[in-house]
Image (cartoon, rainbow, N blue to C red):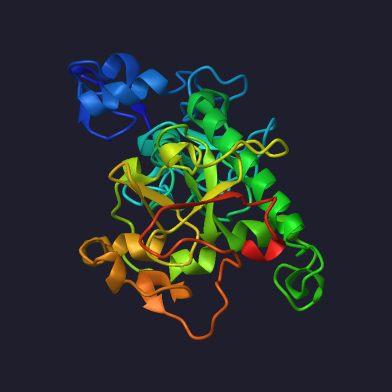
Length: 340
């Protein structure tokens, strides 16, 4: 809260962000101290005074000011769910009054700069996950504000693309009537989009920046400690088309092009050294696998990390060269549905 105290020494102010009091510098003028951080926050903060006498804690340029963070009633928009002393539930380090805030459609309030940082940083690890773009309290409402359009628009575009590809893959797998969607006891009952987003793992190609399929999510989750990765090695099959082996699908283009992992019978998601496709598990074990000769590798069927599997049926349900060689699977949508 900013305040002004008249004293014999003159006008005394309290910084609206850090709370320091002084009668020198910039405080008596804008209630912002000379600290660089406070000055930067002032550039994005609304400078209007609310009818209750408190300064607006919203973002500069908004058509309508936010309700008072100090709990004062507002005839126009009512009270907020949080107040000035509550911590921002994104950074967990400062109160809401310490920086300009925005209110989401669900009513929850967060620091503007924390929302921007979360949207810029996006997810951790190689697999695309969109939790970062939703309210961190209720997880139901997407972060949205006109001042965040520059970081929101690319994320929304990616989100729509992944949703489209997930639903299309679910349909081609004939999973629209699976038990997970038809059983009333399932958490995905009649929720095909949520189920598809949970079921499939997608990654962003380092070269073309488009989302590409990398297998089922449970396979990616089975590999622990993959938050540290080289983003340059995440290359979609179309951009890693070694020797031009993959032909353009006349129906689906390059959106669903896939390669086989060089060391096992899995769909590849990594392309490294400019020559080699890896699934997630084999990529994490690449030092051992790349030191093995082709004769030392188990032949089909082989599981992740080049472990022999029982039986004779390839998990990909396709005929392919011996493990240790590159092989383009082609368009995943046009192959037999069991190859997914």
